[in-house]
Image (cartoon, rainbow, N blue to C red; front, side, top):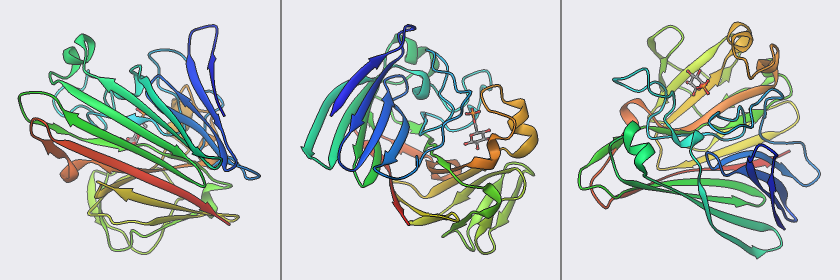
Length: 282
Ligand code: BG6
């Protein structure tokens, strides 16, 4: 079942319910902000203080960082993580192939507004499949007469029972840029979080496993060889107006990305899909 909701402020979301899961997607940003399998806890973290207002990114779920990840490389005045997450997508198609799966296809195209921020003609197609596995696939199409370079991320926020109890497996011996210390390091063993973590892992392969005390989440990626792991910890959480002070305890971002050396150049007419598939098991 697919229903449409609109807040009095005009914030438009799509709610999906099938035999596998329930999910919510905002048209702003093509932003999936809720996914919960039947009889299980929500898989994605959503801040209790998140904005649901036009022009402001939702804090939680899976924001789309595009066409640049992080700060713009030459102009820090441009929006962090690009403009896709605050742009209004159009819902092109919905499909319900069976009682267990629902597919949504959303689109964002270049406009006068986007051309002011990034001077290229493009089409972005977002395919979201809500089933036993959650799949989010973002395809960039170069509709311009010139080549362009993108960096991006499917900035997934996962709910965790207690950040000190989780491990991320699958990145042992992988090189990463530590944004907190501005150093390049090598991962030793599984990732455990006990302080602020803001890292871009390079040459990553999937699957990755997020091992919590009561469940395991498997993250598979396509079209990506970089992974961002982020937890703001105590001080940064306090600084962020749309996060509760202790919010860092119950969330962890593991982002399927095209970041740093994994940026992608697309020639005119070329397409690039970036995809994450997330499966929960007990
Ligand atoms: C992460 C970045 O992906 O996103 C962090 O690596 C950043 O540096 C975080 O702080 C949140 O970004 P924002 O713009 O949503 O506050």
